Length: 196
Image (cartoon, rainbow, N blue to C red; front, side, top):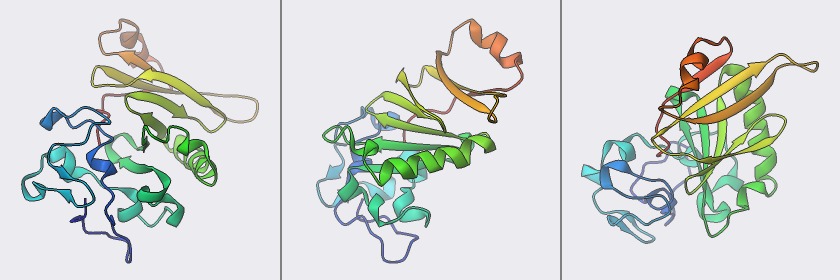
């Protein structure tokens, strides 16, 4: 959205409206990968002052954090990075017209470094292509399937010969296995919605 104030000096949306198209926005009944009806292409949000809380809380890490280099400018890399502080999760939203953008260098190397840094701190890294999720783990990438408001993320850590081995799973919120997992040491359950 062109009216977003960047926290990193010299950075701006420059006509990028990926955040108005890629994630689902529940308050506006907007599905993922559909342009918001309140978005004007190359300009941004037409209801910026009255936008819903999902949009108000959103921060594109390219604009808001200094951790990402210029190669992460969403207008050019065809994806944006969001951080969900409550879940200590990084989510990379990928444009459906460029589904393999996240697998290209230097982005893939950056994503793997994010995973190596976050998982030891009870964090997570996930790629979202529409509602299809892929867990980016320090040692591998794991397809998770459809991620929506009815899913719960479970992250586990097990000892291994070369250090901890992390894993991530998606469960339906009514899955009976969750009761046992809630009591299992080393499992972290999360109920954060997958939007922005």
